[in-house]
Image (cartoon, rainbow, N blue to C red; front, side):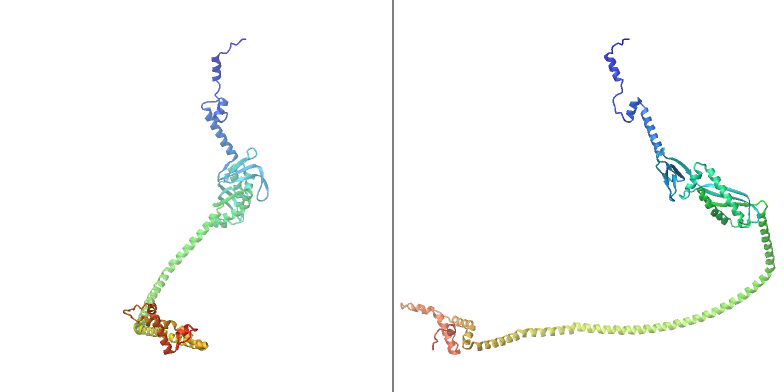
Length: 453
């Protein structure tokens, strides 16, 4: 069979019918690979999300607070050292390994369990019917929750209620057998508490917890309890009738006695009132007297206190006036006197010190004069040289020359004599000192000079 050759248009059409290139991954790529287009992509995404949520619920199941989650499949060791093949989660979320572990939930909500015990023979052989109500739940205590898991995992709550009811009925019969009907009827709360105490060990073995137990009704088929009530009622009625008769019989006598007691009490009360009134008046008079005495004492003490205060005030005033006078007059006068004394001492101090210094100097000069011997005169002249020269220069300065007329003689020595006028006056003064006081200043200044007669 021969096929016709393909044309160019047929080849282009075949190429265009192929899917366009794109990413091989993602929802679009998955749709392209599977050949799905349009709405199939979102549907696949929703399906994938659902699968993911389902896997999450299987891997991390959640447990409500009113449930316990039992995850079985892997062994673990409890607190008491026993090794078990499950773990318990009460409220919350847990992680589990799929295919290796499986989970089951147990309801731990409280359920009411009605209990009816017929013909429970009490002490003495009296049959009693007891109706009670108990609230029972699966215990979440880690010490006994394992017992409940071993006995009730996978059972309906009705089975748990049935087991609890049968156990409570048995214990209730045992408790009724050890008590009289009167005891059961009179103290129902104590009776219920004793039932709870007796049933607690068995409930722990079953993994159950009894929250409350209340007696609702007690009855008997032989009317024993009703007979007790009728006998007690008859006793009460009889006692009431006797009390009423005695009351009516004693009423008049008691009334007369009461009237007599009231009169006596009234008379006694009036007497007591009068006595108390007299005592009150006496006490008032005594109190008034004490008040007057106290007031007089207070006034006397106040007057004495005022006098003492006035005296102390006057003393303070006198002391204050003395201090003021001393501050204004005495202290300034003492200060001025002391200042004047210090001024006098200050004024006399230089003179006294000068005199002491002059005496000391004279003593030292005398000692030096004795030590110097023949040179003492020269030393004295040298000490007084400045003063002597000042006096000589002053004497020459006191000489006033009005007009000097020089005659020309042709001798130059005349002008030299005129220029040496002042030194000649000083020399004359020193020679007069030598002639008058015997102190040769020139000789003292020049020891090598030959003294002139």
